[in-house]
Length: 197
Length: 225
Image 1 (tube, rainbow over the protein chains, first blue to last red):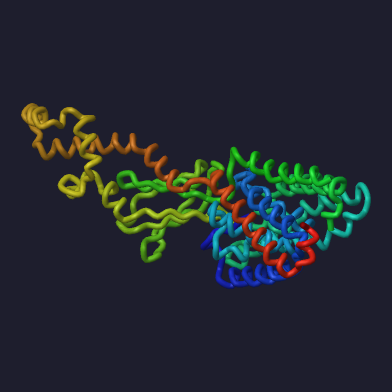
Image 2 (cartoon, each protein chain N blue to C red; image 1 turned 120 degrees about the vertical axis):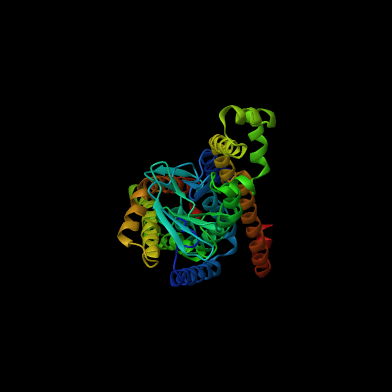
């Protein structure tokens, strides 16, 4: 899911930085004192999750966890993911510095969208909340793969081809992340319901 | 409640770390090494999965495209040295994955010279190639070399050329895995140090933001004490 240096065209890089900067700004502004530690923990989780590797087809995919991060953090997912991506670029050479904006947008924007789409359902009981949690983890990865295809399309690659590859290689990830989100939300609901939106 | 939560957090981060240990993901590593007149490249995703059917492009120092190709099912691609120059090998493995490797001009002039050309025999032979040559092929020692010429009617120059060619060939075969290993070492996968370093930075950032915010909201920080 990390786009490497030297793949994207100039306008895409600029647009990526613009969206990431606005998102991070809103996220930091909305981040209140009580949620700083939570944001840090989820940023650390994202940082490590990219190392959990699932071999799929000819490519390789890894956990993203942007669904649960978005669900728990809302707009603060932007700064959390931006920081983790910067550190991944420094320490792992995943992605790159020029592509940081685009990568942040690709992974954090679906997180925020899923927050608005699914957070209202979490207050419901039983199966509805569980289904929403699963759908959140699933949809966030799906949207990320779609955005990835879009970013590469505007940099001279075939959108349909790239998006199809990105989505098909991430199907197992979508299911796994759906289950992880389902499990985490179920656990938090019992143990620490105030953490949920 | 609090205890449960801490256990949850430890499980979440720790679990991620443990399951990550055996395999790393998401970067394309390109290795290239020179053997004789050929440059070999190998492309792998970090995690060990090979990047097959990926587009390979080779550029010179002026960023001119010299040749194009595709990796095979093992992620390998090889091509004859197109030009004695600093070469840049770029592998596009699809969906935004890209890996690069540079082959320096010096590497090409040192090992990549055509074995049977006149220049190879006279100058620019690295010491490393000359010493094992004497050891692995005892016939090259001055005395026996002279004898061989007498028996077979081959001039010493001709003999030297033949021996050099044979030695170079066997040396190339022996060095192949070693060169590949060296190439891989130059591009290490992320390790525990990188993970802990990154987590440390995040912890530090949380501290800094919490500190700044706590000065803005004295009431909240007092409450927390």
